[in-house]
Length: 334
Image (cartoon, rainbow, N blue to C red; front, side, top):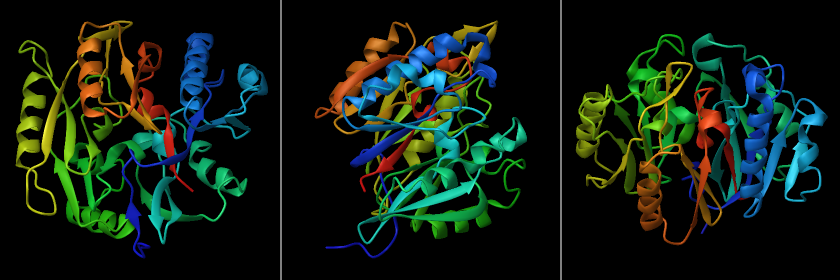
């Protein structure tokens, strides 16, 4: 039976591609470019074991090591940076066909250049890779990492990000109305607490709490009372316990321990296992050479029993403020 209404899919659903962008010399990755590129290549190859990858690149020399992999499509589209989650189009479904929503990207409130990133979705769609799909552009500032869907009419987000004046600068009521309209969802769940030091996105949800199915949320839990995040994340946990689904029932909540503090040049970085990535038949989990890595991996093995759990050392990515989910965008099954 076809669903004639637009549906914002859950990320665990079947996919056709994962979109990535290769770090290049003209970006903030330049200081440790080779290390970042090598890790990105490893990331892409792990995904390619399960599904096709679209690798965007600016300079051909940067993607030579990927040229013989038939699972990886190399597309020459220049980007300012590599955070595909926030500037690439978002997959929805209507009448069993994919509808991409392309929002305005302003680099988290004009913090960085975004003139190339903001063109990526339209340029990529123009390549005609995505047959029998539609692209709908929306004059609304929104990053993919700032919202999370349960695939069943609910979006989870943070007020710190979406209500920040450097985005749309309109009321919570108006944003709620627009999100419901754009994604055809019934409910927007707002979290007012929770943050990560070193995160310059104004608290994206994809580092704090994520759906793993329509009724289950994994969330970041700080057990160290001396850590600066303890009280804020505890308040977030209490908020999560009060949330209700469309049947007015509580969600199943699974705490994932926070890694020990990760620093680079005396700056704390936003390390979180919640920045995991769903692909077909697998789950890629960022790790940080931390004693909590194994604990997190074992929890995900219990949650996703039908998937291979793949740890990816993400410390080099973290230097620029993100991890696996931030770097990628899933394209739903076409």
